[in-house]
Length: 572
Image 1 (cartoon, rainbow, N blue to C red):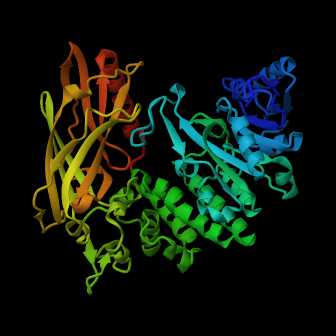
Image 2 (image 1 turned 90 degrees about the horizontal axis):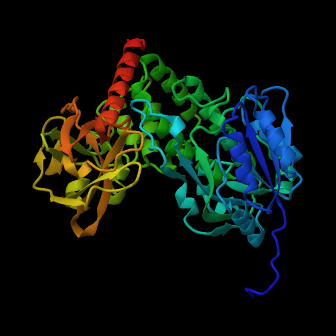
Image 3 (image 1 turned 180 degrees about the vertical axis):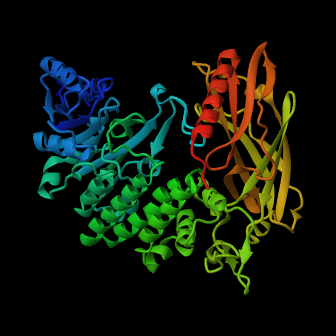
């Protein structure tokens, strides 16, 4: 490029539709992030879904000083994000459009990089990486639902956006079905209008899934970029609406199945059979695994309602759907649900649905020696596991942590899986504790050898064992700004003969109760609490709290959890 050539400003070609309801604290920041994209954004259509908290007045004042902003106020609240997005789409005059929720942000340059990708490739759709960011307003995650700590960004479908790519049709990359978000993409406006592509109206939950299916069904040319183009806060628009997802209620699961069914039918009706089948596989791998992980924490009435609803939906799957990825964890979970009329094997289902997947013992065989799910469900054969590469097997490692004054003994057991572990020849375990918020590890990986297999009888079966000594002082750094706790996850890598390996997490031993009291150590004359605990998926983790302020915050959290448990109706 000639440095002396006259600078040409980007042509305003993108319109951004911002939607919100009762979000006065964040909506102007969302609009400003759209304006900060520069002159490439020619208009921002801010749709207020009948707010009562002064959001519309804030937007009106902003529009008075910014000619690119137009405010549309709906007179009746829609109860969802779909109707206001459609309202905004109807008002957009730009050749390209993006969608933004009031609690989220567009990072600098997002609109420009997506527009360049679309125009360079002649694509109707351009997509980039969306990251999920937990903010201070989220507070502490409920017990048993550990999420990312404050400030940590979690990418959504990162594999799709690892590099630049252009697809003539979605059929060239069926994995596109898994990215159901609409907000991390730029669309050619006339493409949406010509194909009548709109969001479901009203209180329809998970409307993004239906909208995305309609986009893919129309067969657009799609350009993908590895850039970060959307920051989704956990306090975003959809979580404040009356239709906000609440996984504690069965209505939310019913909405999930309805949205998944609608997406499948849209793709199938358009003749996109491969994409429709991938949509069903996506339901098993994402939705089913996510909710199955939490099923054990609900009461018996919820479990039965969830099980009945899930069985009815999975009954719509045909044999080809089940054969699509027969060893995928979600597929195995689905087969168990479909085969049993009552909820069963919930601890094993939770472990198999977790990431990475774990298949807990005991293991069973059919009379002819074929691997099976259990003696009670022998028709669910697991024969494909016999040929699955070892790096993909749902291996189980369990852990027992025995704290001492300044150290702890970590005992690990790698369980056999239908003979595949012995066949692969396990040699060592690489052990690492990693901070959930920062990704920082406690020193280098520790490698410990695995001895000869032990066991053979009882529920534990055959296993290989190893022991590691932890020094508490190694964790005593990185004080949280608010005195809160840092979470440390135990990461393991099983090394096999010939160089193969498998990364796994460690299951907290069911037969070895975790210490209820925190270990207290001195670190530079400061108080540090170390508390082992099991995550919602059953994996062993460590909570570390610094100083008296942090200690009191943990005490308050424990008291709140105890009060919550005592006030919650008991399951019978």
